[in-house]
Length: 482
Image: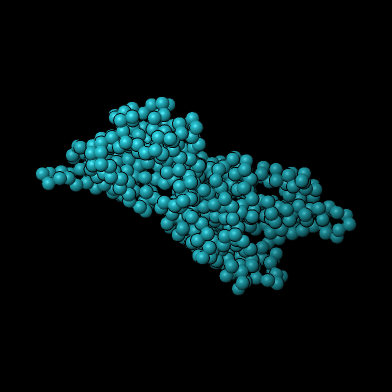
């Protein structure tokens, strides 16, 4: 064992597998080391993996050999006494499947092993104490996801210092499959809330089209995420991602006494509970936000703008955003003017266009507000953008995600829908927001005048939002042909 080394991290040929040199200080009494130092090692690339358990494997004899086991949690391994020859095999799906890394660990070295990488070791000294931190508690459900490969697989070509036939091995380790017969470890589960809404349905379509594995869906009838008592339904250690597509979106009803309470439950309390669960279980939380968190005085809003919501809906969405932003592993995806599979503005305009075109109907024209400006967001594009952030490992934080292109008013959008539907775009007449709602019999939420969101951050992250006007043409054409 080498004394006096500087703390240093070294990446390996297996993605995410990181070896650490640890400073060990010794004298005639023995030695001391900082075995795991969160701040220093995270600064060198160690994920802030949130360990919940510390285990020790004590091995009485030189030559004890254990593995190769891929377990459904991250591990940080170090040696308290003795030394081992370690071998790691990537058993995750992907290009690095089957990659092997080996090294000798003594008290001056440690290694971070990400979930799905097979772990094994052979003791090189008697009375070796092998210790490791893990970030999930053992359970029968977790055990079902273990993946193994045989220590003696010739395709791995591991050069064990002590020939395997001379070592102590368990019966189970002797009978593990060879790599060619191994099924890669399945990824952690993803839970989509609000799965029956417009965005939820788009996320389902994306998952099916792209064969995304281990995705589960729920809605308020199966999991009310605003109710703390409901969280016991899940073993959260099995989940890696939550995509919160659930929300209370009845903007005007949120101004009523009944709607106000429902909006605060779904849009503020629910996200806060999801964030708490995500923090406690090292889960990435994706949460969908809204342009309504702003007052709309600026013509375009970036991700750093201060909240200034005008109505209850915007206030509850801002509160949810604040709760989610408090955890490290989060993506807040902010949208505006959402259009998808369900009741929405475009479908309403198409129906009105048909009525105007129907000579037997007395409706000749409609009025649409022309003093609110923004871009449409199609749920298909939102689903693509959300998975682009997750798959690319983009920096956590808030991202605006709407369609790209020109900023237009609701009246201009309505006229375009009318024109494509029946060629009667001139039937759409302008009206101010104040005039439109002046005779309203029920409470009405104030609207931001300007809802356009700056898209430069998500573009820089590698996702290029589609032009909303092209998406609108495709959407209307699909509705007309259905």
